[in-house]
Image (cartoon, rainbow over all chains, first blue to last red; front, side):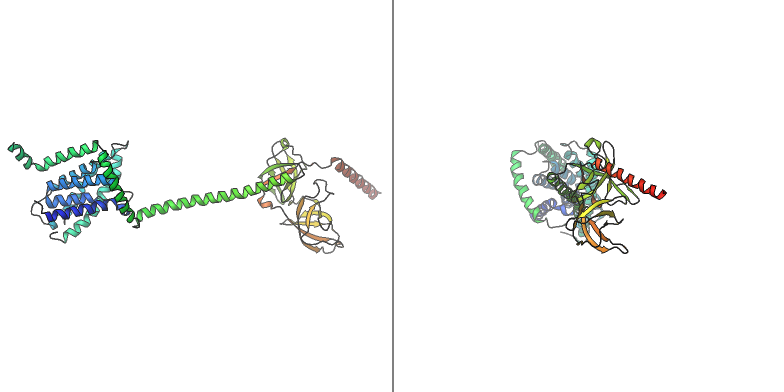
Length: 164
Length: 287
């Protein structure tokens, strides 16, 4: 069970990241931005377990759908699956350094972001007459790469900490 | 019942995933419902104000794209400005031409310069009017600035004009104030020379040079240029008067053909008399 103290910190972090995600225009490359919320969900899933990761993914996804004018439910669905996938790699008793501060974290983030982007773009292109693969290969894969690069910063910070 | 609850708790991750997936799909299918819309309107407003606070943060990639777009826009606008400047000059020229035509007592036909053939020191222009427009050989060609030349050849649609600045050009001209009559030649550079004016006659610099009534080809009083230099011609009793043409031949684009035909009877009489004088003097030599 998560302590209420940690829960508050997770909520504050989620709020901060939601705002940050909407203001990433200044680091966009060819309109591609890193998905900070997926990194957040992966971190939560690796530190707290699959169930918490799924819930966290769904909640930040729903919140993001509402505040970003995106199609309702698309981010909720894709981010809950990111938490679901990352949750498989949760190891009880593993410290922050071990779960996030290694290259393993980058691999998990890349995999979870890939699954996230496939689901997200599948629903994203539905209302429009767009080719999913064309769209996914241009935006989705570039997004995976950019998100993984940003996750490396989180990994480097986590590698120096034993606990939050 | 307990077994079901126990099963759900044991596989709570899967149960949560299935449940939340169903909720997400319901949200997707019922996108943008009224109750969400009002919340969304407020949140988008808040987010927009937060975003505007971060507008000052530069994005190097976006700046590069913006820079590229601005360069492209700048190039297009420069071209547009150049075209407009050119059009402005053209409009001004045409306005002057129109004003000139309305005020001129002569019958004029407007023409555009379509070619500038040059053969050694013989400068010509080709204009886009011909016999179909009432143009005939020998007719003078002018602009509001002054005399350009005369038509020396034509077909139905085009005419060739021998310019004032042509080695073959000879124009009977006079000075407006000094009233001195002479023959105007091209000095083969940028100026004209007014010759055959005796040095005993006074000639001021700045005087206007116009076609004289003695001309066989041109009507009287068409401006040709201004006197820019007066000097004594070495070994003769005549002035050497340099005239600066008022027409800019390098930038000639629009002209008028004056529907003026030389007095053919007079020309014929002059030709006959000259022939008779020539043959008489030839006979004397033979004697």
